[in-house]
Length: 263
Image (cartoon, rainbow, N blue to C red; front, top):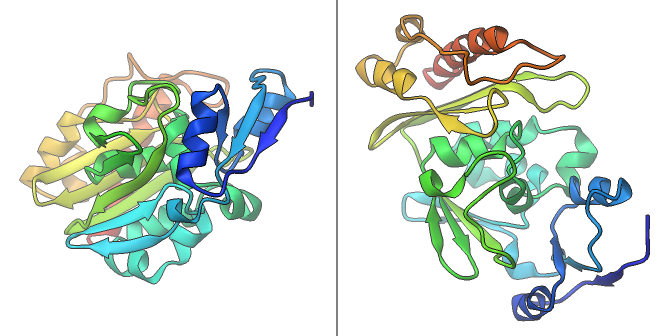
């Protein structure tokens, strides 16, 4: 590590002032601390958001679950409201990394980082969530811009995310065994506006699949998925899996997710 200034503001206004002065926000730190150790990031001032109580917590507002950005993964997994209304989201959170990651990692940190194999972005996109920041609200379809890129401006902080409660939903993940990130993860949701399917781990960022959504709108069954062709030409290929294998996994994981959603 190297020398840097560490700040832990007690409220959002103090954090905003530190960020405006050039500080870098720290949420759970699961990515940022590792990047700093490798000198991939070298912020002069680290602004730890962990003491800002207003950024954490879970509440139901109408037909939405509103989850604070600093809410830990394990708190999402264990929350009674989440388990009752969006059990797929609770199960997703409970399957992130290991116990240490789930204890320290945060919803807002994961979504803001937008790792192309992270789990939460698929839930945000499939459920048609709304990202609330300290400046505005951003629809899920407008938020994710590809690998580690989002609609957030410099210094802009996620404060909470609103998840509409779906008719049914499920998440199926084929794990990379070492990192426990998604080699391919598929979140399916049957919403008031129709079926939504979001895929993580397969491309340079989370994305929806129009063909799978059309098939599931016609018939929300695992069998409907088998008729959909998955184009491998824009999917990832690396030492863990070829693009063709990832295309196959998209079909398989979508079928599994639909089967889970249907109970």
